Length: 82
Image (cartoon, rainbow, N blue to C red; front, side, top):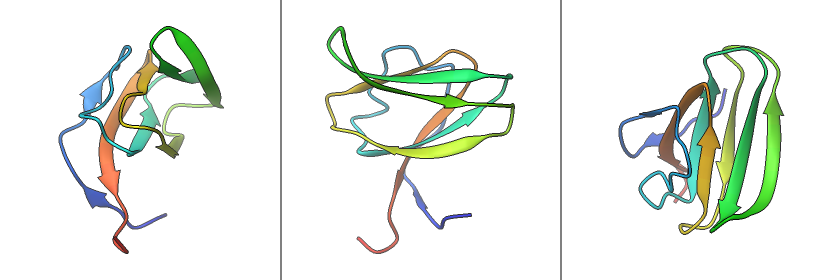
């Protein structure tokens, strides 16, 4: 498990949300088989798949990019090194 600095409250089921313009976002699936989409405006810049409830990942994104995670939580985090 990585060490992170918590930078805000988590957002339930974010939909096209920039997560407070965060650069690093911790995403956790609360339901099975979740796809996380990262977008700029309406363009999908990338997607990643979480296989099961409880799976998590930290995504690096541009502050203007948004995250959609239909069944999960997302929260802004930072590196303890910075």
